[in-house]
Length: 214
Image: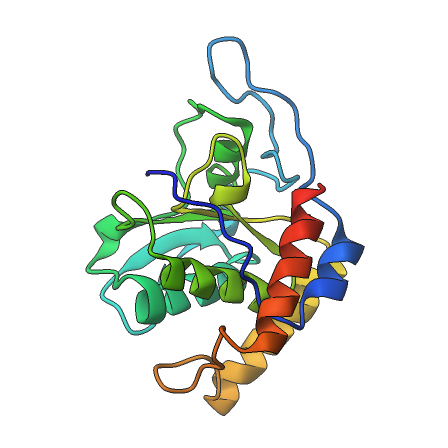
């Protein structure tokens, strides 16, 4: 996973939610040897193998293991990444739940609970128009998801649920994405709002600043 240039392009519609949600939930630090020894990941999610399932990323040949409560949102991120940023050629390009507790940064513990996903293929970084799409995806998620580019150390492939498992914002977003899938009107090729419109760019800047403060 490689870091990429930071961007302030994010879309409208999620700014109020992001401000209300606040930042990522803090968890205990890893042990001195880099082993995560807490029963919860840094974002407050319990590590429960029974809560993890395997899911296909729509439109791609990739499957990924995620916490069932986190899956609707993280799969939305993965689907838009596949369609609009970099195609996911197979399961090797998507990483989700893992059991190895060795972490290089606290946020990597979120993979242990299945509440984070890594979307590979960014190489040496993203082009500006790709970064703009990613910011638009974050805005689509109403501040519930944080991008690894905004964490330290930066990781352009990393996306994590940025609220606890019982957060109302997570439940609302899950309901919205479920309704979209039933109506078949979610973001698809040719059916996505232009992230470069002035309204969405203005929302992008506000949400990026809100998340940067936390």
